Structure formats: C-alpha cells, structure tokens
Figure 1 (cartoon, one colour):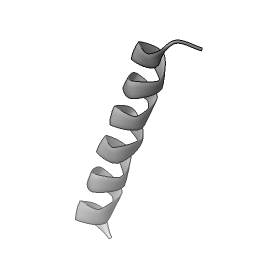
Figure 2 (cartoon, rainbow, N blue to C red):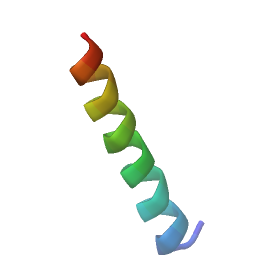
Figure 3 (spheres, rainbow, N blue to C red):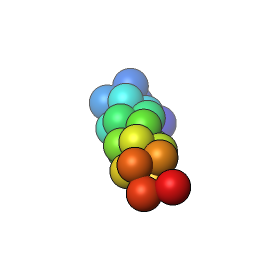
Figure 4 (cartoon, rainbow, N blue to C red):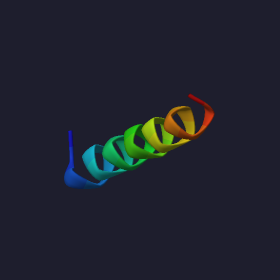
Length: 24
C-alpha cells in the first residue's frame, strides 16, 4: 500500500468519526 491510499483511508475514517459524533 502506498502513502496516498493510507492517507485517504485515515481521512475517511476521521470524517466518519466526526459525522457519527455529531449524530450521537
């Protein structure tokens, strides 16, 4: 896995966490 895909995955994860935190 290259750095870009890893960064992308982390970004998506943080986005999901932020969204769920808003709804909870």
